Image 1 (cartoon, rainbow, N blue to C red):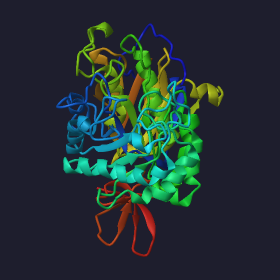
Image 2: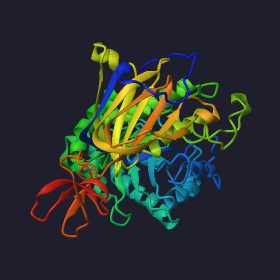
Image 3: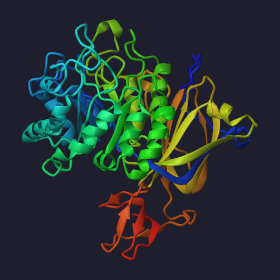
Length: 504
């Protein structure tokens, strides 16, 4: 991601732009990419103290009615119900938050930091990075491989008994990172051996089709995913390919994995990262735009899910109450970074990303154009969503070209950390059905345009409006079966013929 320059002036609002001043042309194409499952964070935080009844962050962050709209929660699967000596977490600790998220229609998944110590070469949940242990003393013992998935079954069974049907379980948190806290090492061959020979022991039928997530390497290391994809049994067992991006840019590391895995119908999740982590101040607006760029780049790389690290931290979504970080760091009050996330979580969840291209009338190179601002586009039901991040200190005049005529729209605009700048909403000035929209992106801004497709326009080429028909099947633009089709989707008749349709 590019360095964000300090701006002396932040332009407020959208100004009228004449066609003659247009320098940038953003074209949204009718070419579907991945479908977005959602966005979330982890229920793992020293400040959150996930024990007892402390579930304030999820009540603020999760659900369609919340201001932020998260829908995926990550929790630690500690080695046993009572936890271990190398972490502060046990199964019961995250239960209140998990119940709240599930009640709000969300997804809950669990990640082991370590299997039980007695299954490991060092006899402890500790990762192995200690004075009396070597690299090999922190791995799952091969004679205990057959115990791993039955152990996950015990976690799923306990959670189910408490009213939570866990949606997915991961193999391991950061299998490539040798740590002195809870941890377990796997190389790619280890993971293949474990999944290939023993993943069938996970009781998917009993636990509502629970999905398997790959081990989540620290830097989205491609060799871990290639090893699984190249083995047919592993490829059939693993549903979600996941990893972290510490020190690794998504367009370089996630994109090749997504390109290889998406054609097999796999999901691609980024399951942990902290942007501007461990800073001694509340993030500046420029630092929050870095977070927006990371979210956007993960989408461009092919992610179907993005899960941030902590929910509650002064550099996350909910304040901690620690006065040393400033008076705005009030405990369990939404921070500006949460509103940046809301652009994606409230609007992009459930959408399908569309291919885009960006041109300029000045004759500069493509690289120079791309460096100016980031963008992405999506289709969701009757809406086309266009997102732009202008992280420079200059406003950008732009023409947006859309694949369908639109008749109305809304703008979400964020231009600063201040309460009145975090997310301003306004109606777009669209007076007649059109495929183009001229606008100006303020300096240092995050803009989300939500256009409503004009269903009655003849400009919606090759799309038919149809009523529901039980003799036909329907799929989203990513090829996934829809039980309740709505908006733009693919209709398949009994004889196998397919067509693009728009269902009211």
